[in-house]
Amino acid sequence: MPRRITLWGGFHLALFLAFVAGYAVVHYLASFTFPVPWPDESFFLWQSLAFGDHFSLLAPQVNPERPIFLTPPGYPMAVGPIFQIFGFSFQFARGLSFLFIVLSFALLVWMTRKYGLATLALLFCGIFLLSKDFVIAGNSARMESFLLMLVCMGMVLIQRGDDFKGLMLLAVTPLVHPNGLFFVASALVYVLFSGRIRKRRWGRWESVLLAFVALLWLAYAVYALRHWGSFKNDLAWNLGKSHQRGILVGLLNLFAREHFFILLLIFFCAAYAVKEKLAAAFLLVPAVPAWFLLRVRVDMWYSIFGALFYLLFSIVLLHVAAHLFKQTKIAKSNWIRSALLAALVIILLFAHGKAGIVENPLRYPFGMQWKGMTMREGPYYMEDRDVETIGSFLSSLPRTKEGELPTVLFFPRADALFFYPLDGKSVRLIQPSFIPRRPDVTIVHKSRYLPKSLRNQLPGELLRAGIDPSRPGHVLHRRHTSEIWYCRPRGNRGNIP
Image 1 (cartoon, rainbow, N blue to C red):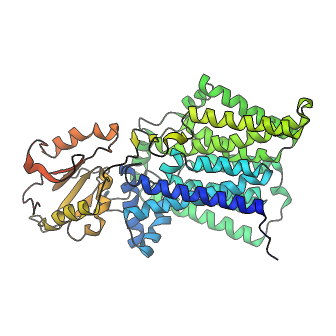
Image 2: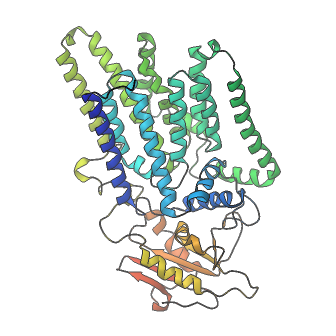
Image 3: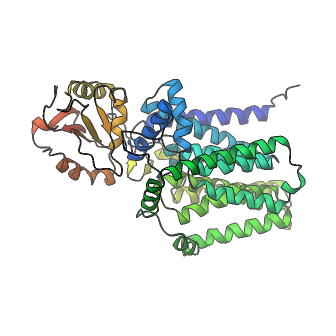
């Protein structure tokens, strides 16, 4: 018989749905301003569309001569077929990330409520869901949301005792992003030290699952070997990016003053939980690698894993504190223990708020800021009439002297995705990577929503395109005073409205 939902269970379900609804509203309000369209999104989505169309990672918009190997192909191979089935739009691509984060939230609630303190666990999960890092991850077409979902699925399987299935799922995550290696290593250490995997018999399905995962890795290895020169070049470029620090530097940074206190707390909680046999210590298995990867790999998009760490570690702290309060003679009364735990909850939330990890409810959601971007009440970043006007101009562009489609470069680069239906029909939208390509047409979007990092690139983009913003003839389209599109194509300009 199905389990009856108790009044308390109904309250938890209502609270869960309320958080999801709130997250959906914030996702809608964030639109294309939080974050603005980012070059990474179009880079990965062009590859996803290529795989969905012809099962190839060779995206002519990015590089018509060879595939790009900046990251493993798990994300394009996962979402490409979805676009093939349901169609593509930039909004839909970001909507998939929204879905991945909501599923991750459900898995995190499932994972954290198992050890007791279910209401507090749900409350913390919901508060973090509405934080800027989760909002950004669920509103950008990158692989972090997909990776987080897979990590949560693998950890829940291990938590339930399906160690082999969990490990096999986690073994796939580095094919989505190398950061998955941190979670694989942590889970493997946990399973080996727990000794559970040695007690399980090796069955047929385990062999099939292992063979499938091995086949995926073998396929990627063969693909990389077939394009070895490109693989080496792209890997070297990726590892040499200025925002990446060496692992040794990252390890030394673990003992920096601002991180050392957290490191001590992690060791204390782990040691106490092992000594007292606290089951909630399992939450450190995904939490510790999330914190560790941020110390040795630096990228603004990885901030979601910082939020994951603080969420899970906060819940572990609450369980350790609750156990300590119970063992302390001073706190014999349930009321006193509850009051102490409530005080700790307030302290944790206040500390997270001061550190910018969770949001100030008095300034929510328009008070959120992330890397110079924020949500604003005002004109949209891109409206339907903007797409229609610029799309009409692109459709009017003639072919080149060689009879080929004119190439069009956008700034910001991902703006090109709004005009995906025209690609390969009226124009060829490009985002050159590891290949010099001079576009026939350049369209530069000046927006009030651009963060400082993109605003600083704006003068250079205008200069390279030969655009003079002060000349009315170089204004392709204007909406209000904040959204202006400039263009000065070479040769025939087409029909500028």
